[in-house]
Every structure is written in C-alpha cells, then in structure tokens.
Image 1: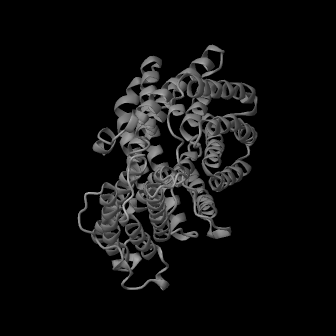
Image 2: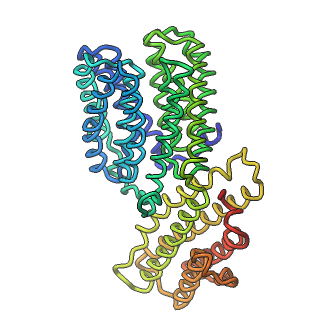
Length: 502
C-alpha cells in the first residue's frame, strides 16, 4: 500500500497540485466562516462544502467545473432544509434519507455533473445528522456554505487554475442502455436497498451515530460499476477505517480537541484525502477516518468507544452494500469488463486508422483525440479488473490472465501513441505497406470484439507478427499486431467467464 501511494507516478505533479490547492481552498473557506462570526458547527459545515466542491466536481472543462460548482447550492440547500425540518421525525427523516441515496446514485447517468450534485445532496443530508442540525440553524448554515463555496471557487478558478494550461480531460461516456439495462438504474436500486438495510441495523447499534452505516454504504457505491468493484471497494473501505481508527487512538484522542494541533492535523488529513484518492482508496479512507476523529475531538465528543462504534457501523454499511450487489439486480463483473475492453480495442483501431490516413497525406485525419480517449478507457478496464488482480484474490489463473490482458492493452496504447507521434511529424513519409498493416489491425480488432456467436475459430490468428522493418510507423504497427495477436489467448482461447467473474 505504501508503494502505491508514494511511488505511484504523478505526471505533471497533478495530484500534488490538487492536494495543495484543496488545503488552501478549504483553509480559506473555514477562515472566512470564522472571521465572519459563524459558529464552530457552521464553520465545519462550510469546510465540508468546500471539500466536496473541490473533490467531486470533475467536469472535463474548467467552464463545466465552474457551472457545476455554482449549481451545488441548488441541490444542497433544499436537502439541508428538509433534513433539518425532519430532525425530530425519525420515520420521515429515514425515508427521505434513503430516497436521497437512490436519487444521488441515479444522477450518475448524467455524467460528472450528475455525480457531483448527487454526492453533494447526500453529504448535505449526512452532515445534518453528523452535526444535529435543527431549523433555527439554517440561516447561518446557508451563509456559511455560500461563503465557503465562494472561497473554494476563488482559489480553484481565479488564484490557481492550473487546468487552463492542460488539455481537456476525456471522460468516457457510460454504455448506452435503457430501463434496468442501464447500470446506474440498477445501482440506484441496489444503493437504496443497501442503505435501507444499513440504516435499520445501524440504528440497532446506535440511535445517535446510525448514519455512519448509511454513509459507508453510499461511498462504497461511488465510482463503481459492477459487483466485483463494489465488493473490493467495500473491503478497502473497511481496511482504511481500521487503520484510521488505530491512528486516531494514537493521534486524535490524546489531543482532547486542542485547537491548533487539531487544525494542523485536519489540514494534513485533507491533503492526504486528495493526494491518495487516485491511487489508493484504502489510504484515502485512512485520511477520512482520521479527519472525522479530529473533528469529533473539536466538538468535544471523541473517545475510544466512539471510534469502536464507527468501525462497527462501517462494517454494517459494507455488509449492506455487499448484500445489495450480490442479490439485488446484480451488475456482473463479466459484462462490465467485456464492454470496456471492447471499447478500448475499438479506440485502438480508430487511432490506427486516423494515423495511417494522416501518413497517407490526409490533412483532416487526426489521431490525437482518440489517443486521449484511450487513456481513460484503459483506466476503466483496470478498475473493472481490480477484483481479479487484487492481492487477496484466490483465483490465481484468472488473476494471471487479467494481468496479461492489462499488460497487452498497455502495449497497444504505447504503440498507438508512438504511431500518432510519427503521424504528427509533417516530414513523415507514407509507406505502401501501412495500408496492409492497418487492414490487419482492423481485422484483429473485429475478431476480438465480434459477438461470440459469430466468431470464427481461426479469427484470432488474423494479426500475425511481421518481420522487423526500419520504417518507424511500421515498427509501431507491427508491435500493435503482435499485442493484438497475443490478446486472443486470454480473451478467446477459453470462455470469458474464466477471465472475469460472471
């Protein structure tokens, strides 16, 4: 786990920039709330709003991020009001909370903006339970959240908007489907069922802190698309919580809510959340758990028993998520992985075709957009195969095949990037053999992505390794052919269900 965080590559220091900017933005938000006379509860609410704005808003363009940030109060304020009004009405409160969970997950169908608004709505309701918000506090909380969002937006979009110098992020659209065939619809139902279970059992453990169980279920469903991904995420959340509680016993409890060291450690925790989120969910949860413990210390209610209760509630939430994904409209890892692999392979073909056309003299052909599209697609493949390549996975044969698929897809991406860079050179010459090589690549991709019922046994041998050549473009094309030919073994020589959990 240490290696994944501290040795993981950080191209352009983007993780470091994001984490540093987030500490500054959240720090400014809390400072502004404090200087304007807001209470500790309001300052914490504002800090949470700023954290969510900086963490969950991930639109492809800066303009889109700005619009989504501006829309956060539109969903957050009504939810805050309803949650506060229902504070003394447990039955209505619980029903609305579960409905917010389902709506928040369903909103993911509208892409990054829907995801961000759904998370903000859920966390607004969650925060009212965390801080025991009542209607009389609403005006103060509204102003605190507004000031915090303005402060965070100022840091993100005016003071340090490094994204302006970066190309737009390519976010792969989810597979098109309708009704229960849509993954977000099925997951919304799963999350609703899992949260209802977590809420009921969590209240048996604690009438005061039951919302921890619902929160655990919610966050396990975030950024997952199959039952395998959800189960792995649940394990990592539980492990991160255990580690965070152990650290909290050593660090947070002895502080007894002392202001200066607690604030400093909260800033370190915030940095850890943003710096580790992209590479290790376990480490991110450690930072989240430590931050929650420190905030409870500021509120004067932290003790070892509270941390033990948090662990128990997290276990209930993880169990609720596991039961939901296993028995309520399961979204199989097999279907999800197969779809993302096929999309990645088709993208490889489009990159190759555009590069070949550019080398042939076309002035309109451009492989660069497809190369940019390939990176997030491969990230989705890695996420889908995460259950198989997890260190604790007992399925050794499947783990090895999954690793082979990932390595060969990375080889394809490397060859495609090399081919695109050559095509971008205006002095690159066209070789007549490019057309034949591109046709072999096209045939190989079609063979690997064709429906099982229409596949020909010999189709996997279409892409045949070619002899070495001095032409740089052909070197990359032949490397691509070899990678596609090797992919036929793990993807097609045995049933797909042996590669991925059906």
